[in-house]
Image (cartoon, rainbow, N blue to C red; front, side, top):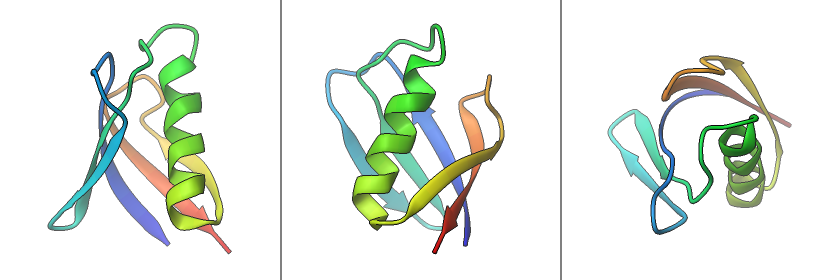
Length: 69
């Protein structure tokens, strides 16, 4: 399954909100040294209980993420 994600780094909370066909994810980590991407994948793994990989948008707030079985 492939989903669209909009990351919000340096937030005061960790939260996943589904809005239409996109997930808005609030992250506490800063977008430095890949910390926000690591937090994003951990949060999505916990949310979906499946393995997760970022397919595009490693340096962007808008990402394409693949959820694997």
